[in-house]
Length: 166
Image 1: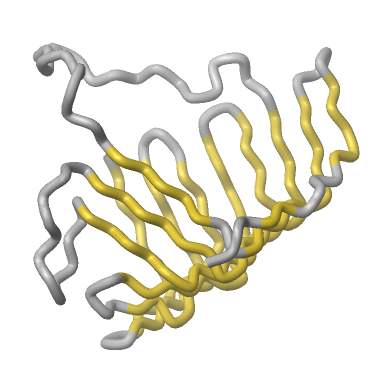
Image 2 (image 1 turned 120 degrees about the vertical axis):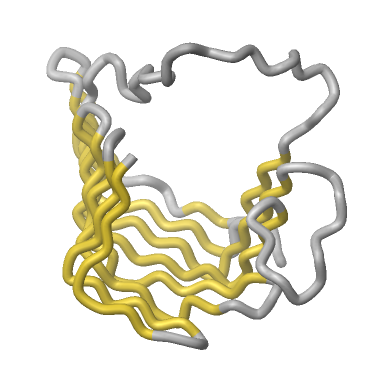
């Protein structure tokens, strides 16, 4: 994989008073995203009586992005440094290759993200493939919803609607 290429974001508007960022498009080509969870130096987990409800957008910015694309990219996620089990999906050791993502009308208002997913394709190291994902997506602190869903994998097809509430 070559070094990633980022197209120059075309920001139409950045308004500090109204807290609005409006961008025409952003494209990433052959980008490698790495997230590793390190053990050393991390304090022991403190038991909390409540769920952390800190918003990720506490200042209530509005972000609008007409088009977001990611082409032939890769995502590596390691929760620990153990070895993943070969040929088995392992949510603690993800390696997604050949990621192609095409989003339109991505909007973030407060802590809710909405977008039209025209295409998502990816292949996990175990062989699981998302051959095609299309949907109207809404992700918020209380649920993730996919309307008008089409999800095609190398083993199945799911249509119409999917929602997780948490």
